[in-house]
Image (tube, rainbow, N blue to C red):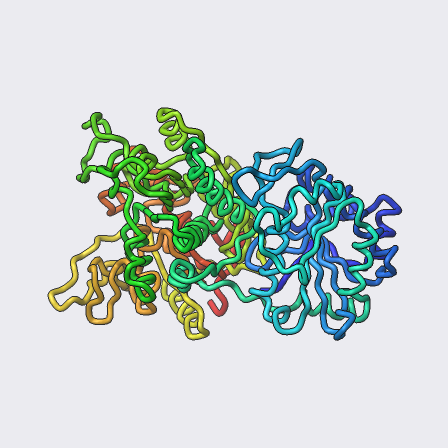
Length: 633
C-alpha cells in the first residue's frame, strides 16, 4: 500500500497551467479518472481560489522547482490534504514535507464553549474544527503511518487563511482557545502575512532533490493502523492513541464542547454521529471515553452488543480493572436517575431496541405500550447523550436504532439534536470505492444495482471458487503476520458443543467442514469464547457469524454467502427458509436485514476481502463483475 495524489508537478509547471487556464480542466479530468465522478462545486472553487495563491507565492520565493502534490490522499483513509510541498530541508538536506491547508474563510469567530470556531457565511453547520487542529492532524498521520517520513523527513504544517485579516486570526488565536501545538512545526498566515509566509518557507524548504524526494514519498509503504481492540486499553486508560481527522475530530471536539456548555448551564442537547462502516465511530467513542474520564468527567460507554462490550472490558482491565465499569449495555438505564452521568456514549446505536425489558423470540413491539422506549432511557440518563450509528447495520428483528428514532425522541423531550456526518473511510484500505461497490452490489441505499469492480492498489478483493481456497489464502496471510477471519451468513444449524467442549462441524460445503464460533462465555480447550472470536488468534479455526463479527475488524475478511441471499436473472432473492437464525428468519423485513448482514461481514477487512457463495450463480456474478479469482486457483 502506497500513497496517491490527484496531481503532481513542480510549482513552476503548475503556474504555467494556471496562466493558460488549464489547471481546473486538468484536475477535473484526473478526478473523474480516479473517482469515477466529478468534483463538487466547493472543491473546484477551492482549487480556483486557493491553489494559485500558494503557487504564485512559491514563484515569488524562488521555489518554482519545489514539487507540489495536489489533493494528497492521507494514509489509511480517503481524507485528502489540499497541498503537499516536497523538497529538501535547508539545514540538513533531508526530505522536507510541508502540508498546506487552504481556507477561504474571511469572517471567523471564537466559539463560546470550546476550542472550535464559527464561520460566518460558509455552507454547513457551526461550530467547526479549528484549522490549526485540522492541519496538525494531517502532519501527525503522515508521521504515524509512513515509516519513511517518521525516520527521514522534516514535516511542517501551514494553514493558509488567505482571505482572513490579521485581526480575525488574532480573535481565534490558539493560545486564546487553549489549543496546544508546537509552533516549530505548524504556522498560519492570513491575507496580510504574505511576506512572512515566503520568508518562513525558506527556512524549512528548498528545491534541492525535490523530484527524488517526491517519488520516494509516493512509493513509500503505508502501514495500516492496528485494529481498535489492539490498543483500546491504552486509549481508554492512559493516553490518546488514534489521530482523528476532519469530521472525526470535529465530532470529538463537539462532544467536549457540549460537556463544557452543560457545566455552564446551557440547555441539554443530543449529539448524533452518523457514518458507514469504517468511518471511525468506535474509535471516536473510545477516544472520547478515555479523554473525558482523564479530565474528571464521568463518561460511560454503552452498546447493545454483548461480544463488543465484553471484548472492550476484557481488553481494558489488563491495564486497569476498574476501567471495565466504564462499559455498559443499552438496557442498563431503565431505572437511572435523570442526568446521573455526565456523558453517555451510545456506540452502535443502530442496535437500540423498542424497550429494555427482557424479550422473547416472539416479542411484539406493540404488546406493552406502557414500556418506556429504550432511546428515551438513554437520553434521560446523561447530561450529554451521544449516539453513534449506521442505519444499514440493523441486522436482527427488534433493532430499531435510526436517526429519525433519536430525533423524534429528542423532539418529544424538547431537546435539540446536533448531527455530524462522517464522510471519510478509515477501513477497507481507506477506499470508499469498495464500500460503495458492496452497497451497490447488495442494493442498499442505491438503485444503481451491481457495478463492475475496478481493482484498487490499496484494497485486495478476490472471489474464491471453493471455501478451501479461501481458507488457504487467508492462512497464508496469517503466516505473513496479518489477521484474518472467515464469517458466514447464518444458513447452517448451530449445534451445542460436545460434552468435552469440542465443536460440531455444522458448516458443510462439499467436503469442507468447519464449526461455528463457540457460544461459550469462556475459553474451553483452546477455543475462544464467542466474544473473543474476532480478536483471539485461535478464532480463525471457527467460522464467525454476524453477532461475533459486527463491530470488529481484521486485516482480511473471508465472507461466505449462504442460500438466504442468492442472485437470479430477476435480481437478488432473499429466502428466509434458508436462514437458520431465529432472531431474523421470521422478521417482516427479512430481505433488508440479510442484505445488511452481508454488508457488515464484507466490510470488516482493513486490507482485503475474499467472497464466496454457496450458490453457483451468485459466485459467478462476483466473477462477471470483474472480481479476480484468488491467485493460483
